[in-house]
Image (cartoon, rainbow, N blue to C red; front, side, top):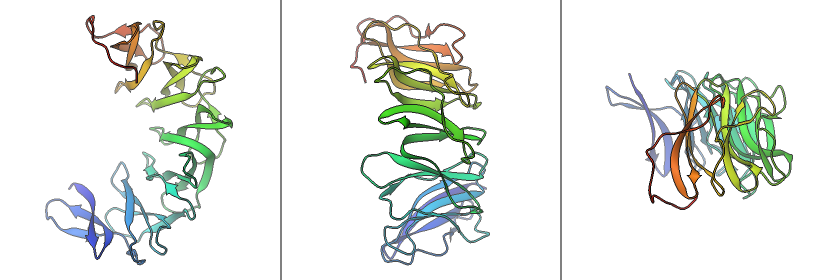
Length: 288
């Protein structure tokens, strides 16, 4: 039976629903229902196995959100995981692949930089602040053991790629390789097998973004993937790791400046990049 999640308006509020396809009936899951006038159920996330549901709701005080978890079949009442007052913003919850922990960020300013928290999905412990206040993005490893994030945790305004245990039992390490004085790590993605992380950074030349790979739990393990780029060349944000975790495909003007082409490279840099597309003539676009 397929589970479909949604919300519906009720006297100006929103309630969380579980819709069981087959009989078409809807069941209200959130309890207690938001009691403050104008209160809502907000961002929600379903665990990978469909057993757990996590959501934000301002139940008691308008605009003060609390994080709840509950079984998706409604067999038990919601459990409070975190109360984030008085923060201004919080991220949607992220459930670890094994369903045991929930991660989220909060921030109290308009800077976009956040504190990262981890909490057991069953509410058996209070949230642990993993790092803050300068986290801009994060991803959970496929084995649910670690979280990787981009932040300026070691040097102000210098964003590196960090890895740490998901429960906070050890502090963060920077897994990227050396960076020049003005360099920053940009986008990153974890391989499906969870062993490596691919990231884009201007690590060697300021303003020239290239592609790198690092081991998920090993400090300073970054290696260059994108080979030698033409003068002025850049790797674009559009890169993808293959389903087997062995190869990466990416866009770059690696051979002719401002002519963007498709390349493939082993994720461990064991071979040079291979151009996948046929030779291009006059196909140009602005660097992104």
